[in-house]
Amino acid sequence: MPAYHSSLSGPNSLARMAILPVNTSYKGPAPKGDGSQDIIDEALYFFKANVFFKSYEVKSEADRVLIYLTLYISECLKKLQRIQNKKDAQKGLATLAVTQFDIPGDPKFPLNAFMGKPANRSESDQLRQYLTQLRQEMGQRLVEKVFDPTTDKPSKWWTCFVKRRFMDKSLSGPGA
Image (cartoon, rainbow, N blue to C red):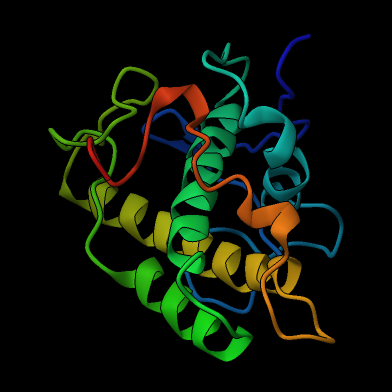
């Protein structure tokens, strides 16, 4: 069975990653979404199926964004396994989204084989802003999915994926 791919496309790209519209209130270079399904929705929807794959055939620039977000969801779940309520989870993931992280082209970035390198400092800054915007929105939506509103506890149907490594990679580096 093949992995799921993104059905979205964008007219612009940075480092071979599509700049896609996002339904978000966070500021950044991503165009405002129109309320329909965006890349964050796709990443959340396909995460549980795609996380089992050790390899992934990239078919579009949007797939590169999907790969990045799938790995970021894994990082978020690692953080959420130690948090027991929604309020602390929102704080923790908001902090994770804006902490220093590697971008395509950096020596320690785990997906350099799939992504391009920003052409200059301006592109690098724009890419960092785009990824930060995606990370912030993903964290906010993931908390809503993972935490049960009635019990304020994380769902075991999400936390069971903590140990899974999509494509045998991790955004936090080896050993993390």
